Amino acid sequence: MANQIARNFVAIGHDRAVLATADHIDSFWDPRMKAGIFAGDRSSLDPIAAAAIDHLQQHGDPGPQTRATEFAKKGDLHNSDAG
Image (cartoon, rainbow, N blue to C red):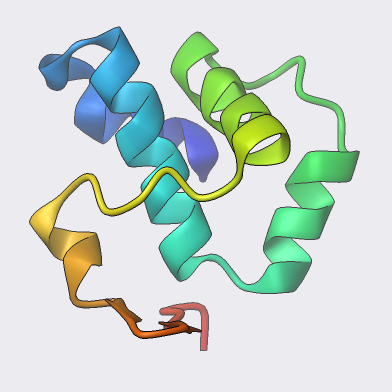
């Protein structure tokens, strides 16, 4: 799924795509999903997705990068579309 998200942002350039992918994962993925990808084998991740995961682990939340995630962050809340 991280690769699919990254592919959606490829057109905005590598660096911005990394932050947008990290933003999406941080905003919408369930904590269990994030824990799984942080602990899992990343060899199948494309470069943007892998860099996004690295960014989240090293720097945390990149802040809203797209209009789609701006609504999800209200105060200290981070909403999830993972159910």
